[in-house]
Image 1 (cartoon, rainbow, N blue to C red):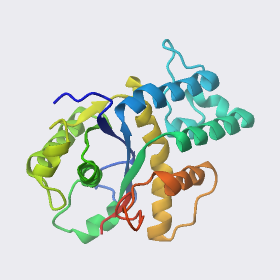
Image 2 (tube, rainbow, N blue to C red):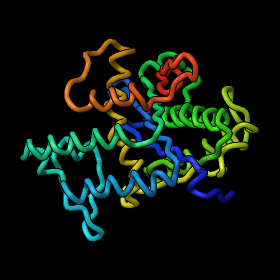
Image 3 (cartoon, helix red, strand yellow):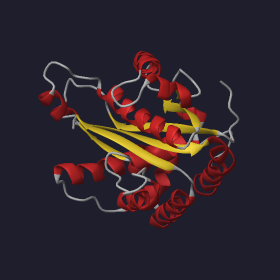
Length: 267
């Protein structure tokens, strides 16, 4: 179904952590971060603003594109080497990125799973962590679209051919059959595509880069709440505070975020 970008909302997804359960005790956490944005807003406003920032600070161009990737930025690798060498550049980036995130029009949702607890709780039934978190995000997207009589689709950053094929099937099952939270009718009423869309880093999709930057700080915040870990310090908590103030999905009346914009698994 073709829907003009001025009327189509898109759920952009990226992750922090891995999906494997083989070393769940050591590699415990996975978080999928979703950004809901009107596609025309993304293409006409957010993407150009992000491009301008990358041009000014990192020399982004068509010939030498710069893709924001949190891990590379934290390590000061590649185009982001200057961030580790020049504290004034790092401060400038943080201030401009925080302003851009604050002013951008989007809704944030995140699903995180403690894989060690998941394995211990479900000895026999062990849902794939990545598929589990994807369902959580798509459920909330479908409910949000239906509440507002809107339509949209879902795009996620590609990984391996095998993993993407399995994830595609998981999405199709939800679309065709529904689950305990949403019916197939609800999903098909608002999702404009029965297939999950994939992007690559080289596609330079601005909202995927936004989701990448928010995934780790959001997971850290959720671990603080659910596991009583020490609160993070630095730039990450500033980003999370913006999400808590104005971006995370929340109950339309009570404004509660937990269960709406944030979901911790297993329950």
